[in-house]
Length: 433
Ligand SMILES: Cc1cc2nc3c(=O)[nH]c(=O)nc-3n(C[C@H](O)[C@H](O)[C@H](O)COP(=O)(O)OP(=O)(O)OC[C@H]3O[C@@H](n4cnc5c(N)ncnc54)[C@H](O)[C@@H]3O)c2cc1C
Image (cartoon, rainbow, N blue to C red; front, side, top):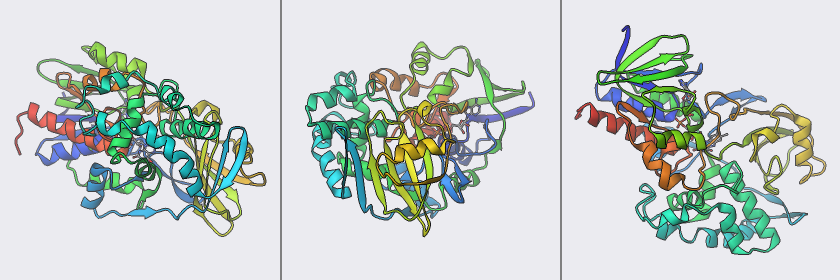
């Protein structure tokens, strides 16, 4: 066979880039096969609306040890967002205005009660099943748990919206344990969790970090190569691309997102547990939208009911004549990333005279190489699916933020999982360095 290497890595997102770097630094020959014409996967820095905008993963934090170590290694800093000056929240059928602190105070008590069990149930965030009592909590949904709090109508609406934002999806099937895991990873402090999610951006953009990792590796990268089939037997593992080309190796890291997994044909099939997890899927199926509004607005944050197409907006870039906002909604089907008039109609529910000039975004759910945004799990995923997805299947090792222990769903989780796959493969191939 023409294309042979020690290890094949399917996908050049953060998990794939890390696994490839680590394995190539151990002296193995590594080939990365990437379906797209670019690296970095679900992170994507693109020139849009006159700026470089992050269409996918964006924010990082020092509470995230893996991504922070990579930023330090390459001397890449972060950009700090200016303080918020104003908050709008639509709750209990009414528009409210106030300071960002007032909004945080409404969410503070309910979130503390909601997340109170995180220290007991997730004492070690990077070993999320270390307390087996979490298995029972893994059957609870976020919506059930909020019901239990019996909140006043304003707090109740805001809590549901806040968690729909975090899940980038509907909270009715959302695993309560996923919320506990986020809290645990943020030292059991929800304000740190919130800060982690949307405050510090990578200097020069996520692409700067992805490129630094790639350049620090001896792996070969082949773009525009969607893999359609993976075969393995006692002698090798083979990937077949869309054009019928075959690539053979001793071991393989497959980093495609959970929702893409069942578009690949595996021979022999993946285990029943892995197939069931892929078929069941996850809940991060929402939208992220960039909006350029006329005029210099205050730096504001706005929240609306969870069912609004966009239920969270924050002013991200303030210029003399325009304000660039970033917005999220729980259902990608409800947001047309080209319909500026629809975005303006929603924004006017908070700020009646706002004028939208332009919008931009990417529909990740319709993207055949993503099919989801950030992975957020259903009930039962942690206790029933995660250990099985992490278990290597012969020569095939899954990696990606969908399969991480700690900050699953984040760039940090992708990096963590890339390290695990590299470690497991080195062990399997008896590489000691
Ligand atoms: C809108 C949005 C906002 C987000 N916000 C944040 C944030 O602020 N902070 C944060 O930390 N995280 C955020 N995330 C999540 C973060 O971006 C991801 O968790 C992380 O980038 C996933 O990395 P990965 O390597 O696991 O997967 P991916 O980045 O999805 O990489 C998988 C790679 O596999 C490739 N691939 C797929 N199918 C095939 C195939 N058949 N053959 C070959 N290659 C294939 C894909 O093209 C892709 O490059 C966000 C994600 C989205 C979508």
